Amino acid sequence: MTEAGVTIEAAGAAGGGSVVRFAGPMLAADVSALRDRLRALPDGPVTLDLGKAGEIDTAGAWLVVTLRRRLAAEGIEARVEGANPKQALIIETVEKALPTAEDRPRPTNAFVDWVATIGAKVHDFGIGAVEMTGFGGQIVACFLATLARPWRLRITALVHHMQDVGLNAAPIVALMAFLIGVVLAFMGAVQLRQFGAEVFVIDLIAITLLRELGILMTAIVVAGRSASAYTAAIGSMKLREEIDAMRTLSLDPIETLVLPRVLALVLMLPLLGFLANITGLVGGGLMAWAELGISPALFVARLQDAGDAWTFLTGMIKAPFFAAIIGLVGCYEGMKVEKSAESLGTRTSDSVVISIFLIIVLDAAFAVFFMEVGV
Image (cartoon, rainbow, N blue to C red):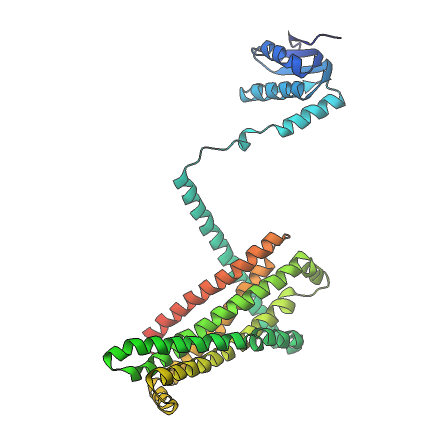
């Protein structure tokens, strides 16, 4: 058996340097002795010659890789020559398995990481806001084009989505509004009874429900129900590459998938808001009758004095804007789904959170606006 060894010779090229010639086997038992002989090498480029090297295992390959990396860190050029295909494959495999300098974890600072996280989220929010605005522009452009060519509107899809977001959501919206009216009447009665002003509970119910809570809670329920459904449906189509197939067939996904959903919401959310107002007033009236003895006739009479038409209209004006936001966010998040089930779940959750957040922000903006104009 040939004994493992290594010789270091001066290179014959004009650039100087040295040649490290390995001879014999380069196995785990020989690596320690070989490494000791390679601790100090002459300056200049180094050639690692494996032409006379025998059998090599991962330990021998590790020696070659670490030597080359050490020389590179010192600014010395090092190259491997004479390796047969088997030796080259082992060396390449070991080099890929060894961690690089970039793979080593850097010292962390909790505060710096926290600031970096905040900065990344702000950046992502800005990018998302710009992309969502552009997506909304595409919907508006598609809607205007549909007005010019009404026969392009998919009536069947529109009616289907109107039933889904409107008729199918009516029971849960009505129940929610009824219970809100009951709670408002009960809590108002408890507080106003202390001042002998029980009759003003009707004003509380009317103004709170008609101006704010009726349409706001309806929009939140629809956002949780329909925005997530839109994202899941469009996202599933994105996963199955159906949207790419539609584009291949020259079908516009905005016109085919997005516009009917958004129009269905814009048409049905005001009706759901009206239903929520009526059922909320019924619930408040029943609780006022049971708790305070206010008869339905007195409740209706006082209700007419409690607010004018603008009390009702300030709530209804918000409905189309809330609907547009729900449809925009739900469809946008669905179109952003990537090719993984995890992405679908994340986008579905994000669509609900973002749409509810934007609804509350827009409601606050409307409240300030109506207050400034004196409505």
